[in-house]
Structure formats: structure tokens, C-alpha cells
Image (cartoon, rainbow, N blue to C red; front, side):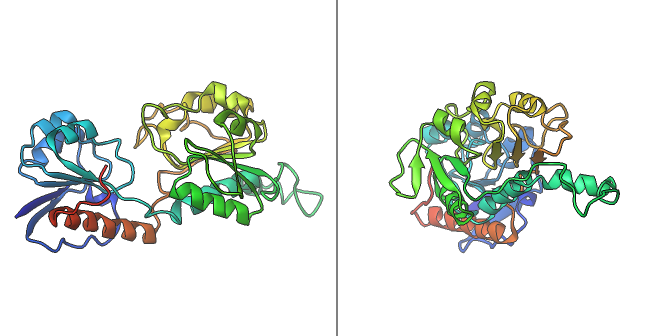
Length: 314
């Protein structure tokens, strides 16, 4: 008999089928960090999307055998402590290869064509007062012929590259392993930052990538460049980005993630009330189709573990 506890069920708006083996199931809409050990007491399988499961919690959970992460990122789980205890950690991979790239390009197009600024002008009555049939208050750029820089080239990076080529963009990539593709230009990160018109991040957050884009890196970018982040908030120094946008160091940024979520009130990016910055609340992944795919893969992982053939193991 497996005892399964889902710590943050409300984070997944999808039908989660019950596993095809004998089990007990409990779920909670949300769980605070201080409640983890108590709620997982007696559990053999824990399911978490974003609730942290740290070493101190794991030490209090002798029955725990598996943590099924209902997401790709596993930075909320102490993997070292799990390995030491022999706890299997499985994540979800490649479920949002349509949703995230589409959201990425929604941000790119809105910024490149200054949609927020023009919408604000119309709402302010400026078009209605115009002496001509249109307004030219803000620059508009085409994607065709521009350079798309992708940092990290997994499944999401591949799909973003496909969309970029469909728009007529030249695709450049900065990644640890060179990409063997004649349609992709491999560049060192600094050259990519200096030469690309749109830079989008698609890599995990870890000690090597934390704050990899700071004031120095932003200063390398073109003044006309855009920075897009639908990966992890901690990849970018948020204070440095806020200042760079205020000072016109870069043309704009579109983010779906922040370093702490939900954000704290004093996050420097929350106070940016300017049309060259778009912030969405970590929803790039959250199309109905992507969430249902995630839910199905989540239970696939749990069933595979119980069958003795764990999949997507970290």
C-alpha cells in the first residue's frame, strides 16, 4: 500500500488520474514550508510542484521513498539529501514545448512592436487627437532579419529556434555543448550578448547560473536589444535589470518568472511601470493542454516507480 500526499494540488489545473495500484491519497491546496514534515508523515510518495522539501524535512520522514515533482525544475528539492537516503526524485520533462515558446514569442512581439505603449496612447486619447490617421510615438521593429540569441538549448530552446526561423530570424546559441546544426550559429555567451537583438533564457537555475545576467552582462547588450526570461527568475540580477531598463541600457524585457514566487513587495521589478517591461505571473507553462500533459506524465512517473522502473530520475 502506497501512501501518496500532494502538497500543492491547486498549482495544477488539470485532471489528475488516480494511480493504477493500491494506494491512499491525500492532497492539500497549498502547503507552507513549515508544514511539510507534518503533512508528509507516513507518506511513501510525495508530490510537490513548488513546495520546498529540504534536508531537515527529509530527515523526519523515514517512510518516504519517492518525490514526484510536478514540474521540470527541481531546485525546491534537496537532491543531495534524497540521494543519501535513496529517495527517488522524478521530474516532468518536455511537457510545455508548445506553451512556453509561444509565450516567449508573445513577449517578444509585444515588446518589439511596442504594443503596450501604443495601447496606453489609445487609452489616453492620443490617437483620437492625432492630426493624421496614425501615431508614430514609439519605434517598431521587425523580427525578420534580426538576431535571436538563445541561452540554453534543450527542448524549449529547440522549439524557440524553430519559431525564430519561421519569423525569418538568424538563430544563435550559447550552450555548454556546441550545436551541430547548420541553421544555428554557436557563440560564446559574451559575443551572443553583444550581437543579438533578442536574447532569451532557457536553462535551469543552479549555483553556476544564478545571477548569470547582471549589470556587466546587460551593459554588453545592444541598446535596442530585448531580454526574455521564461525559465527561472534567479538567472537575472533583478535590481540590475530594473536599473538598466530605467537608464535605457537595453530596449526592453519580458519576464514570466521572479527570484521569489509569489513575489515580495519590494522586488525591484514589481515597481516598473513602463511599457518596455512586461511581467507575467509564471504562467508561460500553464496552457490547458500543457497542464493536462503534465498531470498525465506525473502519474506515469509515480506508476513507473511503483513498478520498479522509475523514469525521469534526477
